[in-house]
Length: 375
Image (cartoon, rainbow, N blue to C red; front, side, top):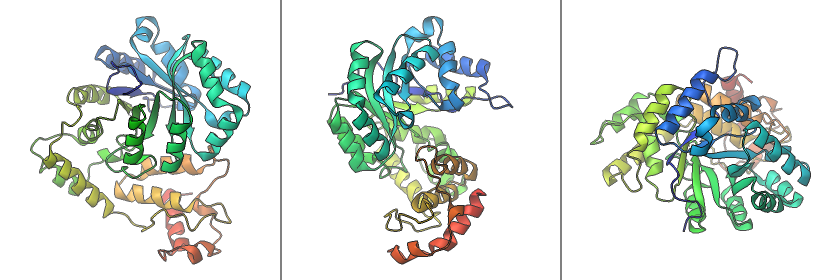
């Protein structure tokens, strides 16, 4: 049985992609109207985090939820796991977040973006003791984690603590990515509520591509590309909440409308078969036949070879170079890992090609990646 209380809206408001002004700051008037419209129309799960919008998302959410709005939502934010150097840091960040959000408690508190190095560090420093303490003193209600690593680590983390919920990336193109479908079911079997991020793959699944559109035209019911992607996730009975990082009022209105039909097991077999056709069509557009086996790693020049190829392929698959570039810059900058891994770091030593079981001309492809992303 799911540990999360019933009554959560199936659509959650993600506060990572709020509308911004020309100078890059949150457009507070528009973003406030969007958030309050969503709440007024049934959305009661609001998700933010310490680093979103260069640290301004949490303070904005705190202001936008003043008055009765805070009482009407389940507020989620996250411990910045990469910044934690001591047990005391955990309490300091949580206390700071409570002030930024202008609240006396966080309903759903996640350990943010867990990958193996972060999990090992936090475990050593006593993160589970911190969570127990924060629950006991009322600063947080439920403890969870968000995840960006491999399935085996996901299962290890699920088993390591009495979590209430977890947050994973999941969409119809990511069934085998990170936790994937197996992780989704594993968490559900262990009673965890499951919050889904990136149901639209950062907007990549909403790109207007004629060959993809022609497949969706076969459907007995016409839907927009965002609705198809969201409905696929909601079709899974294991899913509790689907987050959408909405950046315009129109997106809020549309997604609120889509959520009215977002029921488990509501898609027909005919409709589900179309998702497989779309997946095949996207995969035809892959340029580099990398399987992600990682035999090429580690690279003497610290190039994150599989990740470089994955993000290049995504840009080509979805005709979304701008979105892929944002992911490339963030994931490979070293912000989380401490060491940048850009394709342009390649010194053409050839060591990777000697180890690649697919015989991929890695050095040539890395040049293409570097040129594509301009790094």
